Amino acid sequence: MSKRFDLIVFDWDGTLANSTQIIVDSIRKGAVETGLDDPGQEAASSIIGLGLREAIHQLFGEVAQEQVQQMAARYNVHYNARQNDVVLFDQAYETIDRLNQQGYMLGVATGKGRRGLNHALEHSGLGGFMHGTRCVDECHSKPHPQMLLELMDEFGAEPERTLMVGDTSFDLQMAQNAKVSSLGVTYGAHPLERLLPHSPLAHFNDFATLGKWLETNA
Image (cartoon, rainbow, N blue to C red; front, side, top):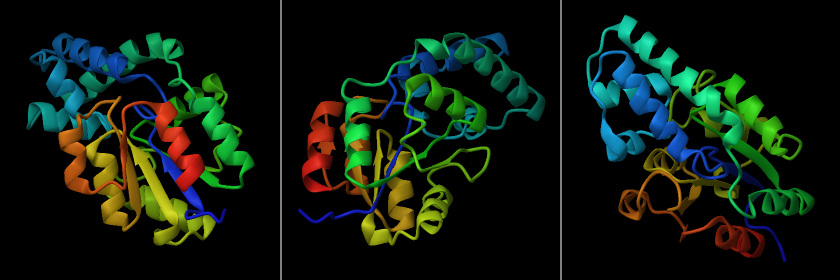
């Protein structure tokens, strides 16, 4: 069967890696330790997908730069202490392996920094399957399309032959801004009602079902 897409780009946290709760916990602890209000579970989850500095400003408004730096530092302390506890969603590794064998170009576009993503790729074993990656300390934060535009340019992929897979509205809005198709997943940070306005081709409640769709329809 002929392929519909040449390049498939995945978000990392909440899409491939089951890290949402660790991120939420780290945001909440970091906020309290730097004199900011605890944003709570729902609000902290709502900004996952943005770069950390953009997330802080969205949660807390106009915050002094020094406090932003302190908050980012405390977040990193808490997240890094638990980063090796992060596991891939069930069937994620196997699906990525099969897609790679089927000849798809695979990429990651993430709100993580380069150091964090490199560690995650090595720890998860997916590093050898990902042909290109873009991080928030190299590009504009989602939903700006820069990450996708650069990956498409790197691999010579046309927008109509590119697919973005993500768990947040920022992922799917980035896809819209880059004029590429998207798939949404609801097992990560954002609920379905935040994904649907950005017109994903389909949405999935678990990675195994997503993987079957990709292997059949992508």
